[in-house]
Length: 402
Image: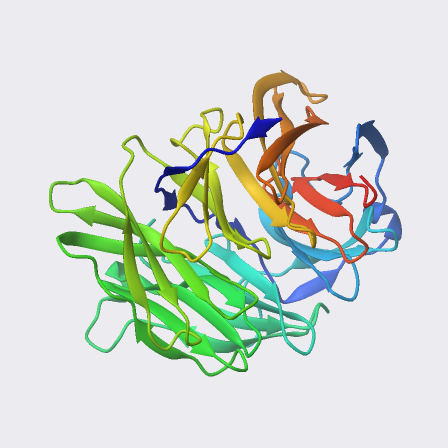
């Protein structure tokens, strides 16, 4: 085990976007939802083909969202189209539904430049999701929408839309929230409207009020990437500020009044190209996880903070951590590459080997092997205490009693 260190650190949060569609049609034939084999690695079980797809090379969910009343919902690709999966039974299998092309109206976008950036279980049931639309021919300009769904194929509707203002060029604008968190009284989202860095607040997920986040001094541009809520209502958002000399610093914003007012804190720069994939609260502290540079096989970067203002760096002796979740006892379960690979069952490819790193509430780290079936892109805790992770069509499940 590796003990945590206490060096103040900073890093940028990188947002993982996942393609997803809707205006769904259920597939015929329940057999497509059955796994074809399962392998055990210590506390983990790898279920292959847990998610039915048309194309094994281009299919499977990349984001899982836990269902408080069931298993999970998965969002991702199904061949050249988009897909949505719902876990069922013992949560080792799923039902897949297939999107049509986007035709407008109250349905999730179905064309390949739309993605779900963030999703949470909604108060009262179902899901609330941020969908991002990237305009054709421009990899950077975008707008976003908030959609609410009840988990059924036709149960999705657009409840909020974030567009460029009158006089702004939509094909050169960056508009809308990028990250979403549920609070005791509603929801908070963070993102931008061109040069403005914003938080949005809502009690019902449908009406949203924008609040400006303070801009760091000497900043040339600033972006906010992720937001998390503590049980006491404290909110923390994290992002990156580019100074005029092209030097990047990490900034955090803290709110103790439900998001109405935010206080800015600048995290000292450590050099390199730090990127964080996850920001969460483990019941006692905020934890940000990712990598010290942009390489999936590079060193991991983990930051912890009790209040979102002062951050400490920890060394799990791991490579970049790509996904994480917190358990009720304060344990954080994170996954990443081991830096090794093996030949795939499919000709012409390889599979990255992965491991899980568990951080105890005391700050010690323990490693568990996941095998060589790819590095999971999303990780959730199921209602029965198990942990589920996904890499395309492979589902990883950690037993609850581990």
